[in-house]
Length: 573
Image 1 (tube, one colour):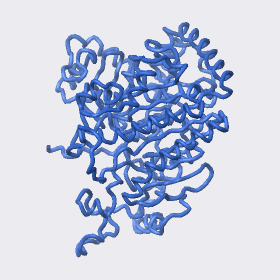
Image 2 (cartoon, rainbow, N blue to C red):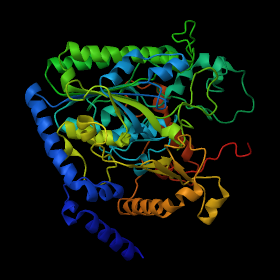
Image 3 (tube, rainbow, N blue to C red):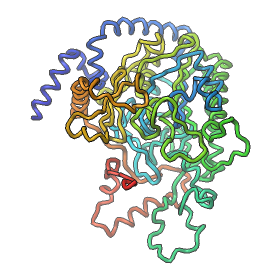
Image 4 (cartoon, rainbow, N blue to C red):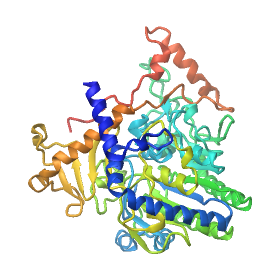
């Protein structure tokens, strides 16, 4: 059977795009790309020649390849920014972001992954997180993170001579190889985990916003046998590092340090832009704001809405304005692609009360495979290159930014060719506009499980509570134009798509068989820190001591893949 599967795979590739594309120097995409390429190759080749000339002319005019500034924030779905009419109805405003949309491209079908870690890994590697074990959200102590073997956009652009920097939230793991200055960035100030750590302090414990993290605040428990038990003792909130050097813990774990990081990240982002613009060196900088401080009180609300999320937009919107202003002041605005987007939909399941996390056009949010979880606001600004006032309806996936950024930087030759790159080059959308996209599909994963497939306006849910699924005729087909909330499946009108969706899934699975998924990196948490606290250094010793009495090898324990363990919480509810 294995021989037959491999033979089918070979014949499929030869028929779809010819053996010439099997050369080792070609980027390998998922199967659906080649279905589209077989039908659009002549047009794409023509466009690529024109695009190449445009990019060459730009570099000749400005003296360097284009700079790239990328801002990624948390938990907002499509419509949250760039649409003042919607904002008016919800009681807040982002005038700078809205103006950016008016002066560039406002994407209406930008797809992310359903949660923050997966989206960030997808952007950095151009790959669905299932391919590298980054499909689930980690918390301390995670014992894992992005593997050293992954090639990030920072590494690709560094090879092309770019200065690279990351400031803000990281959330890509707590092991040394996952630190962002070890993943291609020249400099990085980042959090290994997410915003919930803003609660992990005595004040949060005192207010019962967290429970048990600070045992010193409780009377002695005479029944406690395990110390520290479930407490991730020695955890680190913020790391600061430069390429080739050990990390340093920055500030500490207090809420005051968490709050200081935002201002520091903003300051460093603007300084990085100015420094490299004045040195006439091409640069790539990403600012991923922590966006929300879960513990910080707000005696003065900055929006009529009053929710924590709408209020947070005031600060982010101000900073977007400062970035744009700085690019113009330094004379590099016309040679800089400035792209902003959210990482997934809002926290609509059990959200903290009064936070203003709101469903808009689509159903669902953070963690969901419905459109509300994965369809996000995104805006691209590049004066003189991107035409103003564009609404783009083409499907773009966050992985596409990896390949597109590499293309406009002239760095495609540094993209690895030994693995599947899900990201499609969408330079034609940026430079030519609406209807020039090269993707009409999205494979939607929830964690490491394929949950849905989008093809054009249609969508099939592969996870469903419909009893008919067991018979193979579940009512799991949706028309996203007629039913953007995915409330009313079309069994009879769309049953004819079942076989076609099935073939898409088969091609996708065959590609995964030829290029198998790998695990994320594994290791002792929080090593490689030059100023590590004693309790952080003690994590390694603690793990080794705990394992001494067990008939389990320490190495096997650390390297065990826990990302696929079934977690089905509150099933009785």
